[in-house]
Length: 97
Image 1 (tube, rainbow, N blue to C red):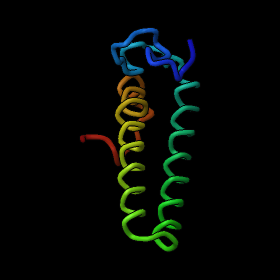
Image 2: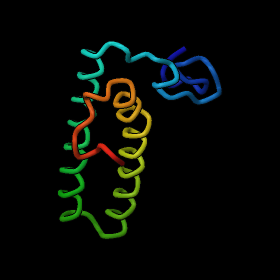
Image 3: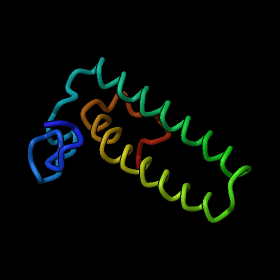
């Protein structure tokens, strides 16, 4: 089984979040994952800024929606479960949401 398998890397057709699998109980590794998701956010935002100036508006809007979905899932399925498990890793600006 691979990460691209239709059953998913968790071996089930039922979707589970990282929080449900408790696979990021290691705080050091969770910190590394959060750094990578933050870098992904920065890169995709930079790409959108570039695309806004170089591609037709309809294509930009389609790209923006797709990137928005990716970033939304990255937050809800990766970052938020880590913050729930390790509240001290949650940035101040995201607390009380």
